[in-house]
Length: 320
Length: 262
Image: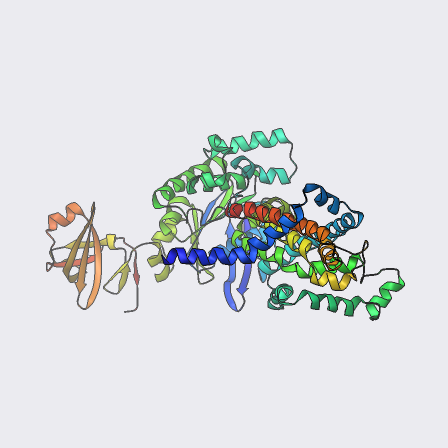
């Protein structure tokens, strides 16, 4: 294991932020700490980096108990949401910082920094200052800076949170490719379930200061531990006392075994898919259909239909 | 019309308050040419006063810079009991009259106080000598550096410092390489302000120094002493020197101020 967190508790004043957190991060993995805002995921990351001290519990990094080590001696790379670029230093000097404080020889620093700038596609920007870079470029610089000291683990705190949607998508897949190239154990914090599923190979779901579920994106998506996990990872709707993904709902005009009767209240076309809003008795629900399927059924407000969860779909029973 | 009236009032106000008095001093000083001006400033007493002023001001600036950076870091970066009290105390010198400061220092360090007597025994004289004058000057210019850099430290945040720590920098390296460059303009501004205040200080220094000519006489004390002894030429010349120093520091602060947001 690259990181072993054991029974960590942390309070801010009287507010508990982390409650008995135990997490293992396997070497070489790309792990997402996923959860709603205020769930404690950033605090957990900062505890691993040594930027916060846990009240109780231990943090072991690469087999060494790091609980009482200062951040400077943990050899972790940390990337901040708002880049934390050294504004008075050029891109080159930013990336070189960790090597300079380690008193490495100049020519060695130069070679390493240029190699990293190439890795993050900033080789032409070495002499610029952070103020002259876009948000995405600054974050890539911050990543190169963190990687320069060859950290045992790389920690990213909402790394794409401050970027606009387009850049965020680009950087996501770029981070995935980078990890496949560099293989450093990486943990990143996100509140975006899509980001976690797309980028990570393991997800630790945190809510309210506790670990709710751990597993691969597939496991968590297909076998959510509870109602909360299921609704956090994607859209859900209720039919027949069950929580179901709206794309797992079969809609037909004829009655079929196990199906419930429903009335179409609205049909919303969202590009290639169609969202069909339904009224089942007193309750509201909705289903996602392909456009072709919806056209074929000829759905319109007022149409009476029969709905049921598709065979093999995940359906969590919920109290009414 | 109202616009012009307002301008006239403002200009007239500044004229009578600032421009005419300062102008008159310059005029009086240079009415006999530049020769007497230099002569007045290069007299032994004047040179000595310059020297004393400089020594006191440099000490005050050095002490206030170290103390100011430390206090600002403490006030902005740390939480501790008594923080609000410290915050208030820092501003106290602005509110207290310099004369009171001088008297207070005499009460603590004067020959008739226990502390003063004890120090005198080991041969250290605070009052009526340079240490007391440095203390008085430090006191009156104490808030300037703190108040110049505290807001900039606040705005700078801790992200860059934390990033430096995770990259393996120790706290001293972090301070020198990251924090200090981040506040350098504000610090420069604070230092210039502190220097200007220290050079121009009169009240507290007047009380503490004992005004001994050629010993504890600063430039401001020199001006006052020459003026009351009807040696107006020398008084005006020294005033002009002080005014010029003030103008230079003002220009320096103007140069330092706008770059702060970078």
